Image (cartoon, rainbow, N blue to C red; front, side):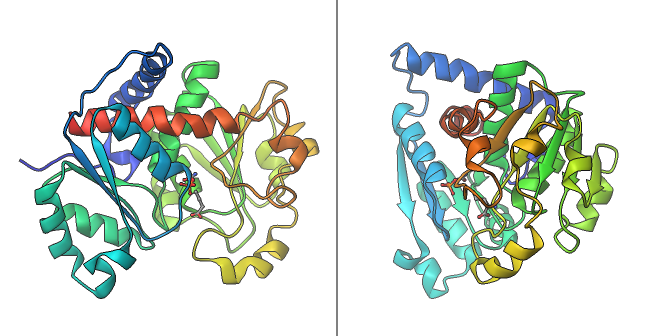
Length: 300
Ligand code: CP
Ligand code: NVA
């Protein structure tokens, strides 16, 4: 039997996604109560990182430890993957030895190819196109604060990047409205826009997109691997900073999210990131609980 993978949110049904979000909140309470719960005793998660990480690495590693299992940190530099062993062969071999594999890669196709040849569940820990694990945490954070997100208005300000594209999938799956404001030339993929057009609207003016939003989200202007574009992007995105005046266009009780790491004074002002509407620290903590719910769902 083929294992279940988590490459994008579309690998889950809406019911499964809601169940994982609710389970994440339960696991958070279990941990806070000090109860030991080890559903993955003796199980091993391999984690392959082609790019840097603080939150993703620590949350998966801590989550596996809480669950009684183990996580292996593997960088291509130290494995044969970095010396050109084919992805297909690596997937066949590694999946014979562990119970789950998380990958953070430059190219999305690396994760999809890996999954095709893996006999155990594969989790996307971020690619150039999608970052679905972050959406689990963002959605958990929203559900804990405000209940279901169906019918709400979410606004994405900034690059049409992996986070933006994950929000597009979430909007369609959980039936919320997503307005995206990005500079011309930095839009998300056209095919994805077409596939999610029932729930997604594209703007080139942040003020229009932010109007009456329940949730405002942004991310860095230059993602990992785009460092050489930083200067050009600073110019293109200069009017896309989420500051207090932009937040004022949203609903009075709107919240602000950012997957982090953040650059104060670029995509978000310090006043917003560190202000009362920001929930970014809960959002970061929820990576732990949301991914534990995912690991339990895929590996138990
Ligand atoms: N938000 C996020 O994925 O953070 P890291 O890059 O630190 O894992
Ligand atoms: N869009 C960012 C997200 C980092 C968590 C990147 O890909 O670098």
